[in-house]
Image (cartoon, rainbow, N blue to C red; front, side, top):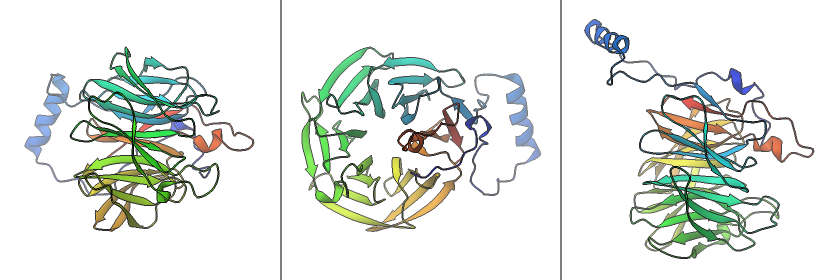
Length: 321
């Protein structure tokens, strides 16, 4: 990753699309003003532009949201998942993991994480919890694998990217053990020590997987396991977390460019359109409460030689869509 924007996270402004707002009649404006003044249940909730994460070494790698709009943010160094309820700016701790956390996913009433040991002294694991943090299940990866991101398909099958061996893992609905869904050299690192397969989403009948090291994007047919490269213009720069907006549109954070982009797919080609720039080494995105929320992981500073001082506080920022 590049050093990115070195503004302090506390001074990060709201990032918006550059578009003209629709006109509003005096009557509709008056109605909205009255609702806001009354503060009733139907009044819109004012969302913060940023949410500060606890401590001086959180390094958020992934975030997700539940149906109520609660944001769950995992710390790669902190080894915790904290939650921000809709309307709250203070984090509450949900999971204290003991190991680092990369992928974070909410599925129905469960919280799923990639539990990772960045020193590789112990194998990575995929763990599930109740939304209050009560532990459920644990699934262990092979010693040479690194769990980066997670997604469920419509049938309830869980998929996970392994950044080190070019593998997509699978846990069938109700399954008791992880299995290999696909292994392909096109998803493996280009150089020793590099991270390849990273963000993963389900869109329609396919998985979409990006590569952190080369910026490549692939479509994987779930039924046939056929892997198809997608040529993105302009090329993605160190893509990390991503989410599907619909069957042909992805939101992708680009850690190498400090950018959030919308990727529109047409067959085997795609167009990347910037949504927000000047983000401090973003790592993941989720759409909730009518906006996109982006974690500013600053992982380039963590893994620099020597390590660089992070901009504090670590934060999640809101991006208008």
